[in-house]
Image (cartoon, rainbow, N blue to C red):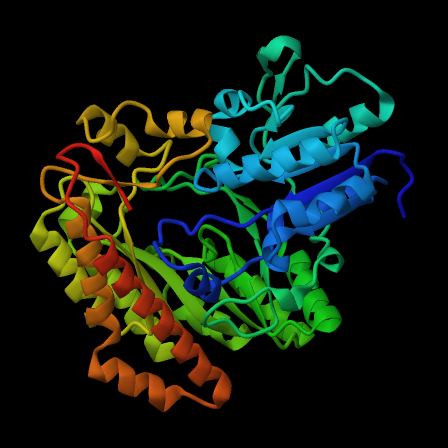
Length: 492
């Protein structure tokens, strides 16, 4: 029950297609996921007595103008938004609507984009403040100060656009070490059946059990913290049990950067799930060097349905360039064990990277098809901000200055693909299409999938996958345009 007068509105907009040049229809088949950061923030603020409302425009399949009356009716004092770099233009669009619908509200934006370009983001007058890093403590202080009428210009972990457009950069805020003090996400604020994802049982929910990542892969823009923090196994299972009992969730997508860190932790978590007899399937993201047979057997007994692992390249030479810190041999062994234990597998691969050769790409395509995966995803390398790949691209002149900074200030632009001396954007798109066709059109994989199919739901899942594959092939043919030149950005 709210005890404070300050009203807070949290909003999520449609997400960018994350470098997948697909139609809206195909993109929707790949999945609509709840915004865990906003759901966690909502529960934290409610715990402190604030009146909170959440609108997920993506899940409701509506646009800003459709939500304008709801914003006006709620009349929030604070509006909280979250942004990834690729989705930055959409965040601006929704903020501009909010500025019109609720002109007196304080509009605060956070998320990965703001950890990279906070000052540039606040050149947009639709935003008043940026939160950098973990949001709970910082945003709570913002809300408490609005409630008390205190100044907002010196809150740790924020950038503030002051009168006259000056941007004030405040000191950073230390990351919270104790994750257990945060309540579970406010699942009652969204309609769980609205969310869906190809290959995931419905209804489903998402969770995280850790924060931070100690690895520094060259293509990854994970910028928050390399300090690992863990939730206790007991509270993790509390949330799993809550989702099953109250919302009928059949599968939980664990979105930890690397779920399988710490064999002792995996044992405690598995034992707790089994002790409470929580009947739910879950899927995880992991590294091939953090799993072994003992870990996977434990997790399988507890309900693990599928494991997703980033492979990225099919040659040790390219893996070293990427600073992936794994080998082909480790990858082959990890997936072999998962397959023998009876866990569904998905691998992620990257087409094109600086210093990649045609042989590296061909070997990656062949390697993906050789390690017994159930599913594979292929993306064309993109030099995202705050990555080693982006730094190298700038140094070698593949990028014209700081592209993503201009993208932030200009409010978007065509999403680029990286071209090097070796590959044009068109060649990389064609390689990606070849990779998908080579993987999914194999007779052995088709036979295996049909032999595993049980019922209408799994057949529909396979049909949806075929739709996405068709869209990828069509997009390659449609976008077969001449290269704009070596060392330049070509539009996807």
